[in-house]
Length: 357
Image (tube, rainbow, N blue to C red; front, side, top):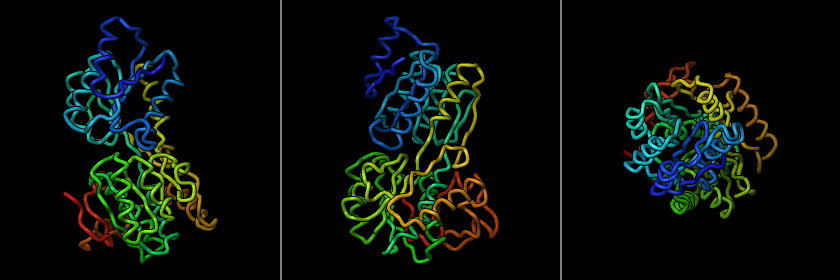
C-alpha cells in the first residue's frame, strides 16, 4: 500500500481523521518519525529507504507512514504519541534525541511496538538499534591520513554525544595509524541538518588549512564545499558521489534495509521481541562507498583495512589508547569494550581542544 506522507507534525491530524472516517487499514501499520527531511540525502534519506524496502517486501500486508522534520524535544513526544493512538503497530523513531519521548510513549502504549535508533533505553515493547559507524570512520581516517598534503583534517560535527565523539576518535586513530603528523579540527554546528551551517563550518575549516573535510551531519553541504574549494572529503550516511564527483573519497553508507525488513517480518509473524542490535561491516549495516579520487595503492590499503575490520582481525579501538590527559583508557593489546564505546565522552590523545558541554 502506498505510504502516507504526513509532511510535518501538524499534519498528523490528517491521519487521525482518516482513521476515524473508517479509511482502509492494512494488516500491519508501521510509522516512522524522522528528525530531518527525507530529501537530506543522508541519515533520514537512508531511513526512508528502509521504509520503502518494507513496502517492497510485504506489499499490501503493510501500510507505512512517516512524519519528517520532527524536533528533538516535546514535539517528538507528541508525534510519537499520535502515531501510537492512530492504529500503528510498530513505530520507528530515528534519532538519538527521540529516546526519552519514545520511552515515555512506549510505557503508555504497551501493545504498540517501538524501534529506537542509536539509543539505550529498552522495554518489553521498545527495541534499540544502531550501527558501528566508527568502523567506517576508521577506514576514512586511514584514507585521509594517507591523502592529506597539509596534515590538517576538518571535521563538521553535530552534537557532542557518544556516537559523534566515538566517530571523531575513530577517524583520528585511523589517520594517526598511517600519519603521525596528522591534526584534526572540529566545528560543532549543534544541528543534524542545516546545510547553511554545515557549509559555513566546512568553509571555516578549509580557510584554516584543512585539505580534507569530513562530517557527522546529514546533508552533502560540507562535501559540496570541498568540491567547490578544490579539496577532498567524505560522504556521510549515504553515497554522495553525485554531489561532489571530484571530491568524494568514499562515504559511510547506513544500510538499515535488512534490519527494518526483518523487524517488520517479526511483527507480521508474531515473533517480535525487544532486542538491542549494533551491527557493523560484518553484518552489512555499515557499508563503504567506492574508493575514488585516490591512487590505487591508497584504495588497496582502504580495502585491506575494511576487510581486516570485517573479519575481526582489526578493531579500531585497540590499545594502547590514552585520553588527552595521557591516562591509559585501553591497555596495550586489548580492545575497548562496548560499554566504553557507547559512553565515550573523551577525546583520545593527540586531539587538541575540549569537548563542548
